[in-house]
Length: 321
Image 1 (cartoon, one colour):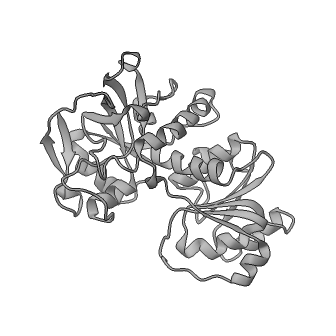
Image 2: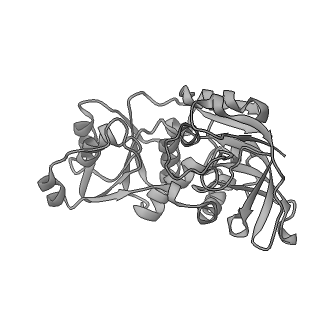
């Protein structure tokens, strides 16, 4: 089979188009013929050597959509999708014509999505669901502020929160596009500037929001804490621009704030499958929408796909097999 592989860390030019043995199914694993696989910022970081646990040589790629080529009879020919923090890191990933995954990782993709659209869901929507639903347990009628609402994860959080009946305050440096789901679905938009705390407090009668999903972290961390009401929940997934932070500990414990870290990379492809399956109903009912796909590339132009993501392309980048 054809695959993209890196044998050393570096820029996208270390990626090579190679011929590898096609994986075979066994008692514990199925083989998926990959139809499309997206490129995430974490894939670019992986190739650059950002993650200590990556084992070389490696086929990168976390997200995929495809068809079961070998496995249990009831799964043969089924259209499936998935993501994982192990594939592309400690086991070969999705930027290949075929992918071996555990049987427990099989999850049927939504019938309403194309393979390209389905391949662009995994990382962003899994970490959004993990934080919003599993950890914060956001309820209908609650208010959530999403810092970085214009990004991939932020946009997914907005969609999931609205589908659960919450009020959404979108916080971002730039106004949200009305063409994007986050722009259409958010109840209010607040610029991320020096007045963001007072603006959000004004929108909530001075009390603050029930949940803050901070997709930026680092430089936005103290702001996130300032937006939440007493006994509210703050979710952190990143440390942009500032790994170590300071905050007023007395204010923190007086407010009885719950601070939650969220890391979907800790979930392997099998552990991620139940979350992918939980998302299916939302996409098939129309409550959730696939993100915009900015660019698509064939496998032999995978370097260009990685370069586009590294350059900060708005929208998702997909490799078609």
